Length: 191
Figure 1 (cartoon, rainbow, N blue to C red):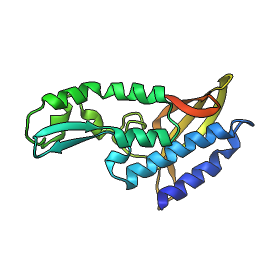
Figure 2 (figure 1 turned 30 degrees about the vertical axis):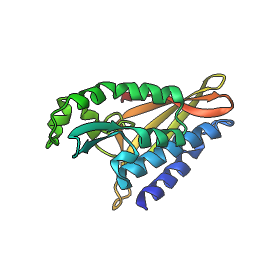
Figure 3 (figure 1 turned 45 degrees about the horizontal axis):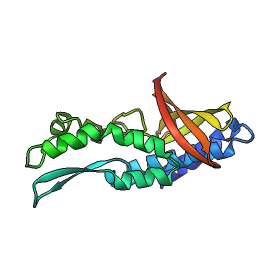
Figure 4 (figure 1 turned 180 degrees about the vertical axis):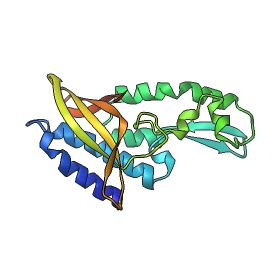
């Protein structure tokens, strides 16, 4: 519940930076990050990232991405971004098929086969620390139907009501394709 409140407060605080005509772009980015941040805090990992499944009967591993991709589509990711994202996991998936036939016991087991991403938050600069909210700082119309959305992430102290921003920012690319707005890229930079 506190994450929904933080999301709404962030939405209200960010409203003053919307450029007329970019409300849909704003809504799409806030929808995705509102869901993603809430999912990190409240849902099973498999909802917001690929996960590894071990089959005790066959003693095999499999990287599962179906639910993850379904949720990305639901939150306006372009098919090209989803396909590029799946390519990031190809090596991990192949290495899992060759992995020892016993369950992994430690994070280092996953790191050693190129699956260390399972313990980072992909859409938060691959950080290991969750955040409480996002603020859209600026929306730029780069060219017709192509937008760049500057986002900052923060952790909120519920007792003091203070917000501490992370030391990275994100530029989210939103495109309008066939009449639909879609998220097409993320670029993270250190501040």
